Length: 278
Image (tube, rainbow, N blue to C red):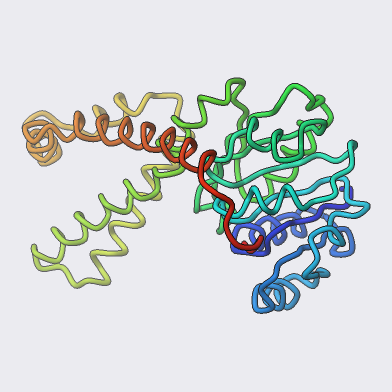
């Protein structure tokens, strides 16, 4: 693994650093920059990598530069970087487009824009990646290797698809947490202790996800397989259908995609703010 610099030392950077080390990267090949001393100390103590307050010191001689700062300060961070033409720039900031990164100083670089989700903090995420025209097959492989440290990866060829990715997988964990909340509430109302309700809900969600991911059957077929005629599952699903839950979920995902596009426009037109912290 070549030298990788992280601009920003927040939770996602920490997750990627930890994953890279588990996958064989050397601590000496990883460095992170952040203005927050607490963030730097946390990363040093957790993973044993070097940190600095100076973004340009971090990226010097680094083959890969991972932009892991807040979207609101991304423009300031990128404009102040002294980037080299042979560096691969990877952005994990939501809503920051490839065009914006090019205008701010990455026009001559290979740039990969990524949309990870929060389970990446546990090495169980999924990240969608999209590259600009300057990104070579070798760069793509390198970006995949970096982001695979936090879970599964997939590539989309059109950047506008990332709005749908954001709506499905970026916001998606919250949809499942919402369902879990409701199931736990129902279980406790039926008399189960809270700890029992929580464990039943979490393990059922885990098991269903594994079945859906590993089975060759579609989710519709899997649902049908556990829905006996006249049984409890059929009764429960009937209530959900009567309440138009499926249609509401479709509307919710579409609304999230619309908001993703809106946020990208807002970030692109907003004035520069503050420093370059994660």
